Figure 1: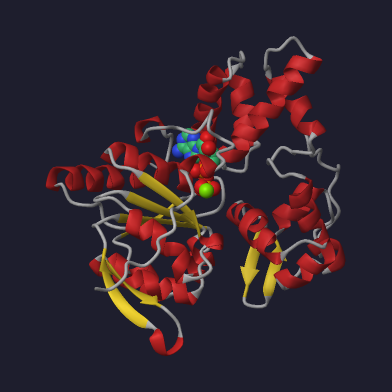
Figure 2 (figure 1 turned 45 degrees about the vertical axis):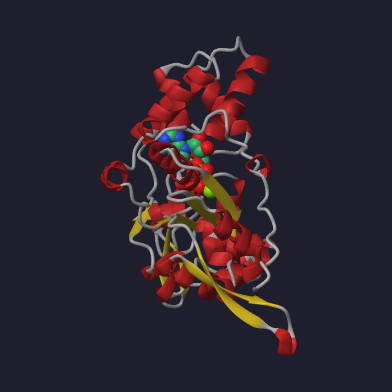
Length: 346
Ligand SMILES: Nc1ncnc2c1ncn2[C@@H]1O[C@H](COP(=O)(O)OP(=O)(O)O)[C@@H](O)[C@H]1O
Ligand SMILES: [Mg+2]
């Protein structure tokens, strides 16, 4: 008789810190925006429920704060199945993944956040788990090592990544659905701000909600953070109500400008303008100058600057656009200086 491998229990769900618990939508219908993604998921979830089969594996990608984790946490609630959460960074070897896989109940969801951070060995271990619901486990060491084949219950893997380009093609191809989340419109963010202002029980003018929304870089997580700060400011410096003027003052104090850029965003643009002549320049060089990791710039700073056409990526590196110069109130190379320096904050 083969001895059963020792199986470690996965960490309890309560270990997972959710900073956004109070504002995170709990069900998919509470989510705002991403209508196409929503519609496709709704169909897939409905069909899986009717067939009583596990939902196909899903990969979410897109910049931070756009709803990947929220979707991943809502889906099992819609399906009425348990959820396990793992972080790609913590899965350093196949053995780290075994407890999650062997504990996965039939049709349950295993969510792996930052899945691009798992090493190749873990990736390869996942292939048969995703495809055939089985894993090959090696027990013992050296000459005594044996490989046993374990069957898993049919489950759904949901992966989230800010860098789908870093996933190997074989892993990407094993996801039946791949959904890209894009930045939100100002209207959608204003809706999120208004709803969350109610949840936080703070009176907010529609114009103020719109102002906060338009300064949140298309990102719900930032809209929520900005709203929390504006609420604090309104309660400490004003009468507790959020008006447009209060929102503008509060956000100016944080260095959040009209476009929603924060001091780091502007420092990034200014560094390219001043130190690198507007580019093209490699992101590593900018990262060195700013003394910040290139990953942070690539994941958190650049996507919105690219999207709002302040920055372009060329084969030779990053380059500022004339819009960026105008926004920063700098002279566009080869053009006359602007008549008056634009104001950043109102
Ligand atoms: N579609 C949405 N509707 C309402 N709020 C959202 C939506 N997407 C994200 N949020 C809010 O933004 C926060 C961050 O989203 P999250 O799913 O954690 O982003 P990601 O995992 O993509 O980094 C959530 O806690 C939630 O409050
Ligand atoms: Mg997340």
